[in-house]
Amino acid sequence: MSPTSAARSAGTGFGANHYQRHRPEQTLLYRIIERHYPVFTAHLAEQGRELPRYVQREFEDYLKCGRLEHGFLRVRCDTCHVEHLVGFSCKRRGFCPGCGARRMVESAALLVDEVFPEQPVRQWVLSFPYPLRFLFASRPDVMGRVLGIVYRAIGTHLIKKAGFTKKTAQTGAVTLIQRFGSALNLNIHYHMLFLDGIYVDGANGSSRFHWVKAPTHEELTRLAHTIVQRIGRFLERQGLLERDAQNSYLASDAMDEDPMTQLLGHSITYRIAVGSQQGRKVFTLQTLPACDPEDQFGDTPGKVAGFSLHAGVAAKAHERSKLERLCRYISRPAISEKRLSLTRDGNVRYQLKTPYRDGTTHVIFDPLDFIARLAALVPRPRVNLTRFHGVFAPNSKHRTLVTPAKRGKGNKSQGHNETEERTPVERHVAMTWAQRLKRVFNIDIETCRECGGSVKVIACIEDPAIIKKILDHLKQKGEVREPNPLPESRAPPTHLETGLFY
Image 1 (tube, rainbow, N blue to C red):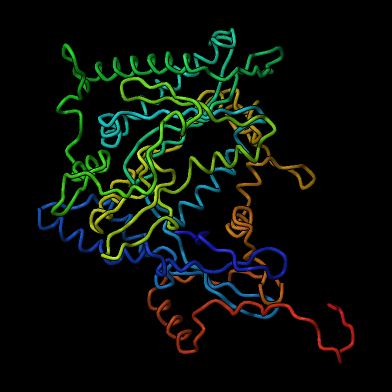
Image 2: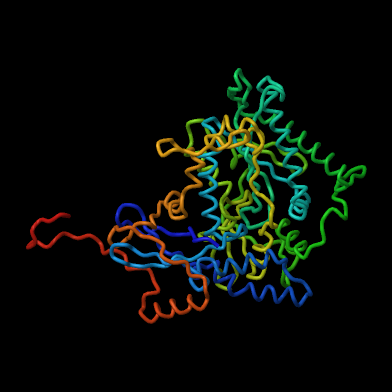
């Protein structure tokens, strides 16, 4: 476990924002999970089922995330000796909003600072029909193979459109595999950040960038047809897809037998997973009139047989801030606590980020079904959700030539003198967790909020007996809270002489 960077800014003290411990136990999401997760596991046990261990660990670690009872750092100011405690984070990838926010901002900063060169970038989004979403959730290895097919199809399209061949030109992309939809449903789809052009090999090992125009609707539709056909042939060769005269369907043995199978299927198809209403559609709340799809979206993506390909968002070479916002968007956490609330009868109400075309703005879950939704969003262990392709691939010889970090095959890192400038990746590795906290959230944990002095970590407390002793002592003194914020500024008394600050 590492010190949590799920922090909140605490006003302005001496310059930058200052660290204030996040209190997850005060959030609605934490209270729902703390109360209903044990009931959910007991409900499964009555049916002779249980969650996989990696899903259980996700819930258990979330309930410990940021809680001082499970370990903390002691941080002290060298000047005024004021101390505060910093809890540990769970570092899980499923639904923890704090750890998800940290990963979102760090991933975006990494991609913009160290991966993408100052060239235009376009987002390609590919979503899949329900059966393939279920297949990818059950068989992550198949999901990776299909991703390779999709990258090669789009990459070949860009190279041919530019008038070159794959022998003389290369492109590159970073894929972030997103597992959730706006209704907390399991929706595995690809967000692929492609270079909006290609690199052509030049003399002396150099590369020259050629911009490629945005795809038209006809090109998107043709490309979607190509992707669908190639994926279909691949699944048939693997024995995962069967066809008859009119239909195609997944083979009966395509999915692994897993306790999560039922939860995944209900989440993908927007159906209730547990309780007396099991199998019915999730309850929705419609507060807006239905609208025409063409009125809601400016350009229609290529849609073929349940597949949807979209490429309408792009960032120009000089729009680095827009690119970072795009990276944050596609790597955002699965759940937003701001859109979460309870109804009067105790059900969980979740507001959609964007209303559906039929006017739906909220989905409503029974608390146990809400826990089932969270369980379905947890990815399997050792499944990488960020993939690098083409010139960005780890073994590409072009990676050192095009990326700002200059890291890759054939570039052995050399020791730097004090006068030599380090690359962005070396600076990134050299940063401490406190420096990362300041880089990501503009929160300065190394500066005392009381006096502006230097703050340092003096101890890492993980022993349960010592943790209890320290917290009990602070509770008796009434100090197990953040220091009081500085009072609001006011005019000096008229009888004092003008001093240093007046």
